[in-house]
Image (cartoon, rainbow, N blue to C red; front, side):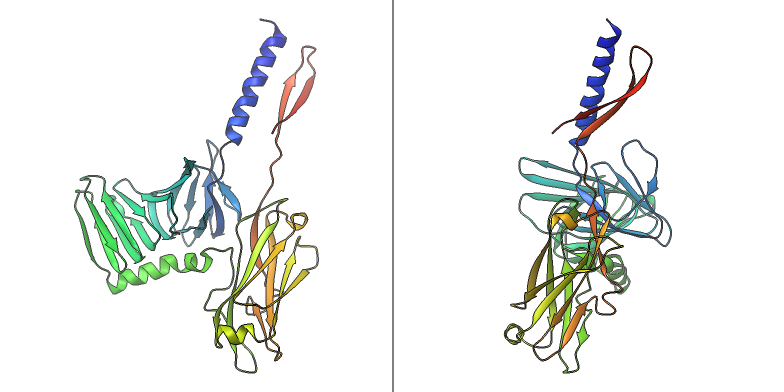
Length: 360
């Protein structure tokens, strides 16, 4: 075989492998790493985790002491990886069904999982499998392969892989899956409820949103009216419009009074750190007001946003509630990918060159 034929064969093989790897799509995003959080993708070494980093099936995330990571799946389910924990993220879409799995090698994971048709969500350890159907809780992969599941809302089928025993766990209950194959369910103790609150508190604040104010955060005007608000959005992508919702989550006045207040909502966003905030305005017609940031203003890795609500009586409220402009919310943005392959090679004359192949 001629050198040119060998070269072409190797080039096509490299291209095929690259395209195959490109077909693997992200199933989740590292939404919020705090402290020392690392990730590993494919056969690569561990590297620091950054906000808005997409996670492909098989990617591993680990946290060190006094650290945690919030992971957000495509359908907005939230997983909080506690300190000194390690998990593998998996997921696939087949025949219209989105199946996800979080395999806990060690440590603790809090979760708030959306209930959706045609979707499966499982948490697994070497000893147990928890099948989730829209709920929140905490799963601890304990020492000596003894697992503890503390459930906050909903219900879960909890399976011991040693004995294949399955028990249904309801809100307010704790299940124990043991290495000897036994499994039992009891009412959660005060200490277990405390652990649950600790393990899901940050997840609950992020549920269905990129970081906004907690529903408990509120501002009170000089007229005595109190409003609590959030800003929610899916994970953004470069060169794509981003839909953002400003929602009133708590109010000391009725919804009808709020609608009739003659107020308006102003949404602010900063495309890049060195640019000024841009502004959008809409009438206050209910609890939720939607805005769309144009694709031309969407850049990785984050976009800074905040919002204000002004009522006809002059009352004004912001999210974040304190120093909104100087302390805006950072929405994660995924970087865009170019569909091209760059292949360095040496031509028959011995010169080093690079071949660029664009593909759809």
